[in-house]
Amino acid sequence: MYEGPIQDLIDELAKQPGLGPKGAQRIAFHLLSVENKEIDRLIAALARVRDDVTYCAECGNVSANTLCRICSDARRDATKICVVEEPKDVHAIERTKEFDGRYHVLGGALDPLSGIGPDQLRIRELLKRLATQEDGNDVTEVIVATDPNTEGEATATYLLRMLKDFPGLSVTRLASGLPMGGDLEFADELTLGRALSGRRVLA
Image 1 (tube, rainbow, N blue to C red):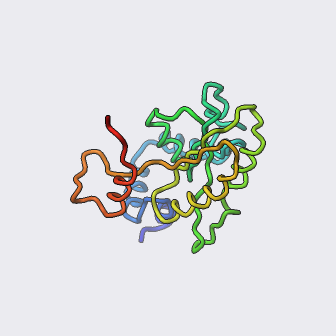
Image 2: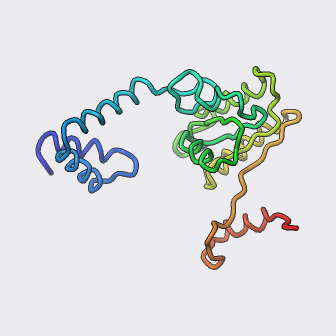
Image 3: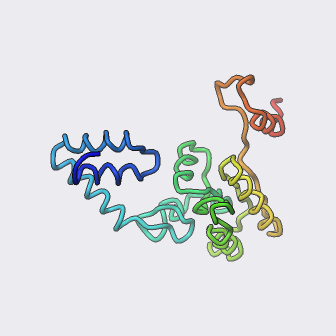
């Protein structure tokens, strides 16, 4: 235990995801060694996040404006919506440069044990978005890109049940399988099974 402000800083940093006491301690002592202007920049950045960052009124992604840059981009294909759990998932998919549609951020995944049901997620907003079609472009495909874990699978199954009655709407799920550079012998049964069931024709 350290004294006063430094321990307070370590305690606050340690509360952040992915940071334990050791990592928090390293950051705290690093901040002690830098110039005041660097700390001022960090404080200013945190203040801007607190005061200026909001959520897109359309998709729920983090945004500095009413609509995020993706929803306000007329070049994006409005007929495709990729449903993800968190804003960080939008960033991950955008990095692939393979998707040119729009997004819908649920704000998590179904997890009854933690008290997260459909009402705690932005599922109602997705259904309303599909029902109104305000921009005049009918959505023809919803890609469910929830995490490949128990909660993500439960969410995907629930969404499929909610969306199956929309006429002309195709509901797809991200393919899952073997990572590039991996060995079959090290793949778990679920991953290998998914890879087999999701196989595609080569020629």
